[in-house]
Amino acid sequence: MKFPTSSALAKFRAPTVFAILGLLAACAPAPVKQASTTSVTEAPTSQALVQVSPEVAGMDSERLDRVTQAMQAFVD
Image (cartoon, rainbow, N blue to C red; front, side, top):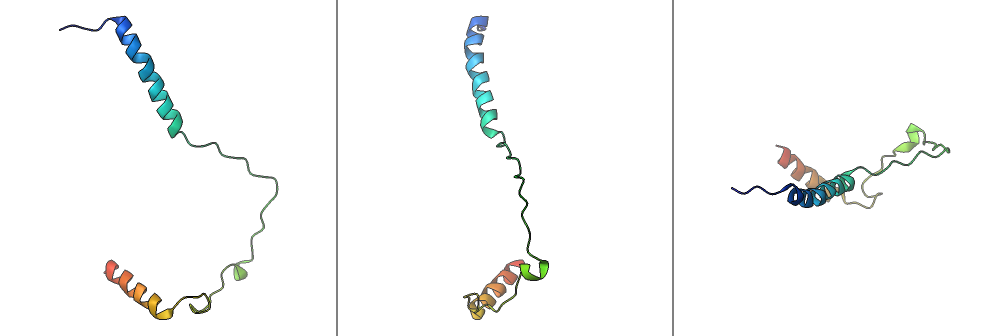
């Protein structure tokens, strides 16, 4: 069995190491931006969510009932 020489290993090792480092750098999470100094005000809880009928929101009650029944059938 013939073993590669150290110079042959060096030729193979450098590109492999750079490829691995490149993959690791590509998979690293993006840097997080610092929060701005201005604060965001939230709406009061009573005004955050308003319940309306499906028709007011532009939906059909009968179709929503069919979707609810189909999803319940998947759960059951």
